[in-house]
Image (cartoon, rainbow, N blue to C red; front, top):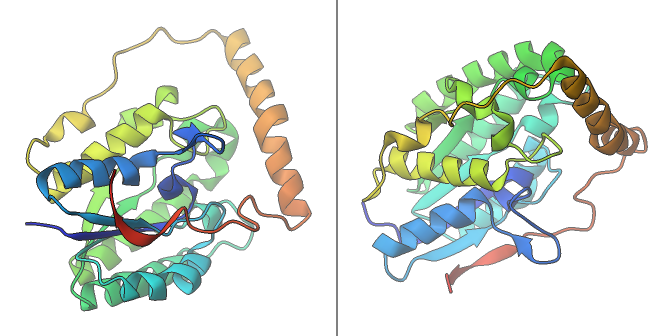
Length: 254
């Protein structure tokens, strides 16, 4: 399958947070995938509409119409984690929003790729009470993807995805290794030349950290990342306030 117009929709993961910074720019898995697509599809045009902090309904409201106007033949949709970690989460409602995007994009002729979410309780132990939400949302996503012929990259089934090396220090965004692995997973799901299943192989084993070191790491994470995140939520603030898509138009890669 040749692709000429790739559009990425989503939140901070698709924007690329954790793989670069605001000063130098964020790369991320979608940029990495676009680079691989371009190697086999000369003239590929790529747009990335994702904005950090967006809920699924905001992705639909702000990005879907723009994506459809760009007439993609390939689209990726990753959203829902920002909903999942908030009070009042409703898996059926969030998956319904995702399914609307699946339906609209496939109905317009695009091949669509989406993802299930990993076991966040293994990434951040304090998030273990949210694991039932992850399981429910993933179930709905699998069903919605099947109904619309959407390609699904099922990360929950892979234990290594929760390895600390796959995540940046905030444990919310993938690390460069994580972004590279996921881009390779999407490439494999699409059957791109040169792709294979090595992206799903476990990372080399490391010695388990001691109890004291683990406790210290949790304390640092709480003070540095979890605390400020909670404070923003209490003030009704979002990390994406005032931000727009980094690549709103279809343009060729450098």
